[in-house]
Length: 290
Image 1 (tube, rainbow, N blue to C red):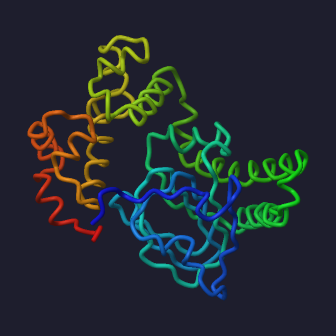
Image 2 (cartoon, one colour):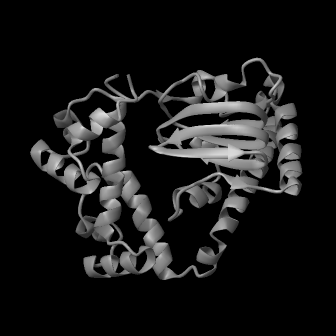
Image 3 (tube, rainbow, N blue to C red):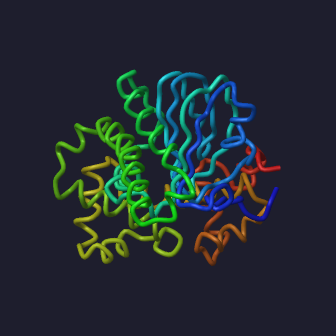
């Protein structure tokens, strides 16, 4: 195992802010895009549209499968590994976070639900194909050297990722239609937790960041999610702890410090309580980062 989980930047495969590739089962090595990196994170978004084929991946310890006409996304910093890629036709688009519109990022990063593959109909496939084809045609060095060309590229890219966001947002339409102050606050809380969980551990601190009382925060979060505020803080901590245990050879003490705990024995007790097993036992059962 390694000291850290490898994190790849888009600059590893492209000089630009995004990369687009047509995946074709007749293409010699389509799996290079997703599968040759092993267990890793990416600092960018990955948007994949499949017309046909079968893909299986591990994303943050969960196995996701996508078949036939479907779309799926991998968000920045999620740990993932390709497990199966068979007879795939479709599109692969990687985009740096700062080139994804805020409205699109909000759909994925502020969601109270997990991002999963979604089956789509042929009408959506045709629309996404047309958008991707235009984007790929415009993806030339000449286009990137002019201000006007960049505007065209960014407009086409916004249309492409915008369709993904629209489809995903429809999946939570019932939730969105009831948008109110409580739901907005719950989303804001989740964002703050994702950004600060290594340094900020208590609901009181997050309440202060959001300029509300702890009592109001805990009441709202339980009302909206069915779980207490502390649960969501612990969720971010535990998933990152599991990543580091399974995919690096950092010691438990080093992992505790990495996650903001000066007392590694306290961290071990917390992990055991949340995961149902001690850190060492979890590592022994999940040695996938060899």
